Image 1 (cartoon, rainbow, N blue to C red):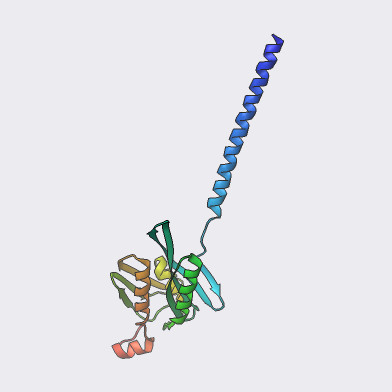
Image 2 (tube, rainbow, N blue to C red):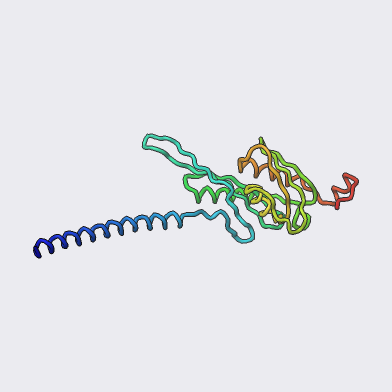
Length: 202
């Protein structure tokens, strides 16, 4: 009886050890998978010199070829100095970093000067591009940038800290950025607006 009992206890101990080792390895894989997902993340904004860079959109295109699929990437980047100069660029490449770099260089070449009234705009403007329609209104100090991600990127790069915006029609980020630039190009100094409209702006 003692020999049979000891043999059964040894088998039971081996089974428990196998169960524990199997559970531990499964938990380890789960932990590594969780860390992998947690560490993954793209940085959408950086500052280089006096110009800030914000990635608005990255698109991936897949071309079906004989060996499978060939991917290419297109990036839209907004750059600005936060003091009234802002531009946007669009770049394409087979990898993400080169496409972002191309877009950044194009944005630096296409900088435009925006007329600001301290930290807001001087009057109401509307911009359109395709089906995108953006309305921008001046705001009192402390209001902040009330806008979506695409319009916000342009406003912050230009140095606008207080503004109210509303977009209609298409919600395509690329179209919204271009519509926002169309609106900003219509800005005029407050004195010119008062003289042309023959009114006094508050």
